[in-house]
Every structure is written in C-alpha cells, then in structure tokens.
Amino acid sequence: MNNPIVLTLFGILVGIGASFTGLGGGFLVIPLLLFLGYSAQKAVGTSFVTILVIAISALLAHNKFTNIDYRAGLLLGCGGVVGAQIGARLVEHISTGSFKKLFAGVLLGLAGYLFLHK
Image (cartoon, rainbow, N blue to C red; front, side):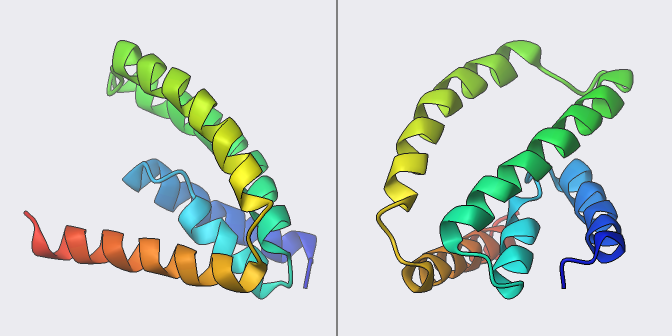
C-alpha cells in the first residue's frame, strides 16, 4: 500500500488540512502510517519529514497574507526543539499498541475541547 500516487494524493489532503488548521498534519499522517503497518516510532519519525515539507510551504503561503507573528513562532519553536528531543526519546520506550491508545486519547481530548468551547 506504499503506492507513490496514493501517498502523494493523501499528502495533498494533509497539506490542505495542515495549512488550514495549523495542526501540522501529524494528526492525519500518523494514523495513515499506522494503518499501513508502520511501527509507532517509524510513523512519528516519517510524519516529521512530512510536516517539515508542508510547514515550509505553508509558511511561504501564510507569509504572503502577513498572518505570521515571527517572534511568537520562533519562541515556541525554540521550546519545541527541546521538547522534540525529549519526546523522541520517550516514544522509543512505548509499544505501538500503547502509542495508538495514547494518540487516540489525545485526539479525542482535543476534539472534545474544540467541540465544547467557542
């Protein structure tokens, strides 16, 4: 199922969703990769390559509309660099089954929050 055409078409959908919502695409890419049989660790790592490419493109598009606070983004990004190093080490110690449950819980929590708050 690693058909390049299917993956590219799915990437287009992820790019639209990521650029529109700002969620980075991982919330869509990781479930797809898990469905395709990737381990949790490989799905997360592969997702970051996807996110990097999409983020650069989305940054260029949003810059044209002046929808960027560079100071806030860079400060969050600097903190994110530290957090990413910690998270990459933590995910190595969790099984794919446990990861799926944890990831689903995060998505459900986010969905519930967005649904219940204006």
